[in-house]
Amino acid sequence: MRQAVSHTSIPTLPSTPSLVAGEHDRRALLAALTFIDKPPRSAPALAGWFEKHLVRPGWMRRPTHVTEAFSLPVSLGPAAPAGADEPELQEIVEAARYRVLASLRAFMPPAADDRFLTAAIAGARVRRAGNPALWEPCPREDEQLGDIVLSLFAADILSHRAFHDAYLCVCKTCLRIDFDPSRSGRTGCPEHEPTATVNVMRRGRPPA
Ligand SMILES: [Zn+2]
Image (cartoon, rainbow, N blue to C red; front, top):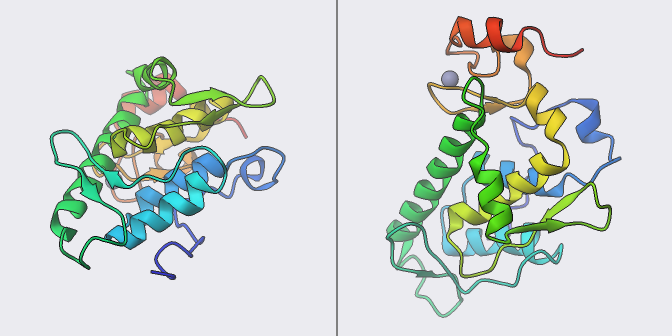
């Protein structure tokens, strides 16, 4: 439980200076990437992720249950017998994770479908932060897990759209997230070549 969310070494975290320089608050992106790269597999791990990444920054009240799509809510509380709902919880986490990645894949060129951003705004899952150019997540605790994670991505993308348009990569084949389009384009990964037309025709070379 203590170890489950304590790691901060995330393999896909970009080394791009603008992200690690600390000039902007990128905690929402870090929270989202942590969920994607190290999906919490148990109620205590998921509760810990919420606590560290959403409750403590003041973005969300502590949830007692999680749900996704048509699943019944699964308890995160200490009253739940250890491991009782673990298969259900893992299904929720996997379904949420897949829905988030599918939304990000659709956000890649050439479609550049950013409807999840307008949905996050319309659903009041993001709000303007102190600096009016920046956004922060504010999901409600009864919302679907996928929408909560998407609100984290949405807040960072709304705040740093140019960064994501230049660097965010989602492999069309395996949905891997990366931030280095110089290697495999924005829709490939080291193991899967991107579609040539997408990267050559639409994006060309990313800015240095
Ligand atoms: Zn791939």
